[in-house]
Image (cartoon, rainbow, N blue to C red; front, side, top):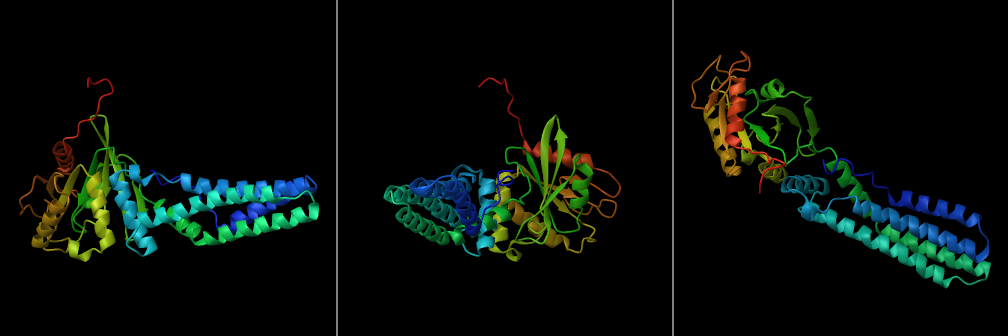
Length: 328
């Protein structure tokens, strides 16, 4: 996942402590003007290089898959409590780029001002340190914001937009989680979205040697659109970029606690929101009732029709893997 390995973002105070402590050690190894030059060079390099590294560790959002872009934008809108999201992060990163260049420039500037007199050189070096400290104070909030963004995005589940994906939808208690648990052949990963109370669950299964993702989104695709806030709604848009097929669960028995008409209305909303993405309707709990029109019928409780539902989703997706030696 593109945000998983982002390094911890240092604070302004941490960078200043690191830069000036190492500069002091570098200065003790030399004398006179050379000592002050070494201190300026060391501190400006540490500040400039570390700030540069913070910026370049982030992916270029102009080339991030639409799924991750929209999801990151939704999460950052929530984190920053504004409508800018990714654009706000870009502004903070731009300020850090400026500070990286500025601290390098200050090192060169004050090294050029150093006189041969040791005491006078020490005063110039202190002035250079003060200017670098001022720059770091200016970007203190930017470093904090970038660190918060990193912490918010690193918990995203590993959903890979380049792999075929089945998105599971439907009201709570209709059998979605049980289905995911039954058909996935690997450990199910659960990750909390900052704006939801339940974790997004990702499992995998294989079909004709192709690895498929199965995504369950409690808190997003289990209630009507008018009950979702803007950020949750944008997360649904992000999922639309990742999904190759929607597997929508209906419970005609009513034991889920939601009337069948409400379930059908939610299905219509999901179908409209996901546009051209195929939607397969699954009637679950057939051991209790089959009184609904659906593409396939299943009972998780009885272990009946589960593979048929999965096969129907795969067929509807129409995914064709690229073969390595296929003629262009």
